Structure formats: structure tokens, C-alpha cells
Length: 300
Image 1: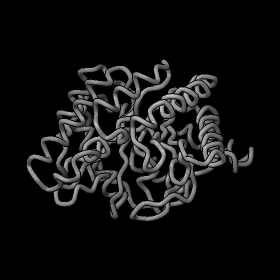
Image 2: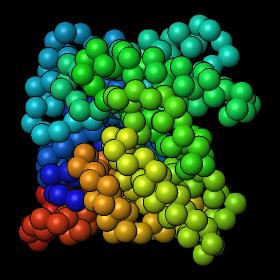
Image 3: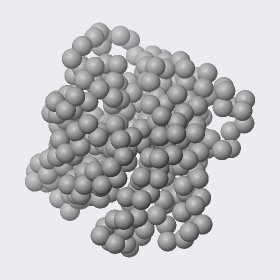
Image 4: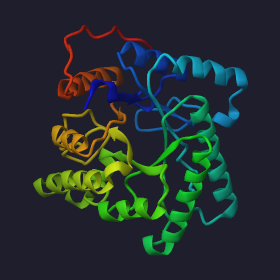
């Protein structure tokens, strides 16, 4: 891992406006950033800073691109809450696909390198029954993104088994469609019944490593965070939970992964957690660097 791969999602700054979140990331020393192409989404901390591209005026789009250019590399997360791409309802499916396409258009305008999507079967539908639909939708999103020269990362977590997930990415079989490895989602997807146990820790880490090695060059993006031992809560500050972050980074290096490692946190002490996480990752980077700088003063 190189320091130039370290990034952070604006979603780590719940409760901030989009402008304040961008400025805070800059002040915290992040050279790269992850944008959320959805407004009004929430996590346990608060409302996440983001935007719906179709609702942005041309002036707003240009202003956001100017601010984005203060960062080196950018990734975009497409809308996911309340927008199931494989809903039973045809109108919901159509709207969901249009919103993802809009996010792709925004990502291209903002000069992003990838777009992350969530892809799951309809509620109560088995993997086998919904398999063909998953493949078809994944291929469709990939085809649209290819028009803009963008890569699409299907986020891990569904299917919950690492081997099934890798099989899905292979079945979609488009050069610009791969995976976004969300460490926490991969770790806990099929281990929740083992939360707070040594066996669970072992299995959670194996899930992540199996996914990395199974995907190989189909791994396009990484959401990096940890999982708390007591209750299996993810999106924790790396180095504070059950995941063997150094081993995971070593595995990424082994497969030749050079894309972004995007911190995606859900901590109450948002700026402190982001700053500490950046310093922690820089300490693991092969190109090292001075991690002794003074912490920036707090912003909003």
C-alpha cells in the first residue's frame, strides 16, 4: 500500500454539509475523497453529506467539480437506500436504474475513477431464483458506465458467502464491472451468529481474505474500516477491532491492488477517528512518511 491510495468517504462526516465535509477532509490531510451521490441518507450518527446529481443545477455541478479538484483521486457511491435495483415493482426498478445512471453521469463529470453500487435480490427471493436478474442488472449498469469510461464496483455483502460473491462478479463478465470490497460487510455477512467469539474473529478475517484472493484484478475499490468484537458493529476505526488490517493490506499488495483504500467510518468523534485512521494507515504504507504532524484544528 502506498500513501497515495489512502482516501476517506464524506459519509464518515455525518451531520456536516457537503461543503463543510469537503473542507474538513482537506484540513485533515486527505489527498483523495469518496463522494456520496445521494442526499438525505442516514447512519447512526446523523445525515450523510451528499447530493442527487439529477437535482443539481449546472452551477452547482461546476462548483462541486471545482471543489473536487482540490483532491487527487475521487470515487463515487451511487444511491442505495430505498432504491432496490431488483425490486418486484417494475416502476421502482426503473427509478432505481435511472438514479444509478444519474450517479454514473455525475461521476464522469466529477472525473471519478469508479462508482460503487449495491446489488441484491428482491426481498425474500433466494439467490438461485434471483441469480439471472443480478447478472442482467450488473451487466446493464456496466454497459452504461462504459459509455463514460467508468469502472463499477459491486459492493460486497451480498451474496454473503465470499465464493458466491466472486462467482457473481465472474458471471457478470464485463471488463469494467468488478467489486468494491467493504471490509466490514464481507467480514460480518455470514458470521453474525459468531459475534464476540474467537471462532467468529477467525472466520470474519478468512471471509475478507478469500474475497480478495478470489477477486484478484476484479477488485476495483475498497471501503476500509474495522468491526467491533462485542457486537460485530462495523465502520469502526481501523486497528480497534477484530480485523487484521496489516494482513489484509498485505493480501491487497499480493494481488497487485493499487486503487483507493477509502475509510468509511461511523464514529461519534468523526474528525478524531478520521485523523487517527489516516495516521494509522500511513504507518502501514510501504512508502512510510512523517506521521508526527500536529492534528489540524477542528472545523464545523
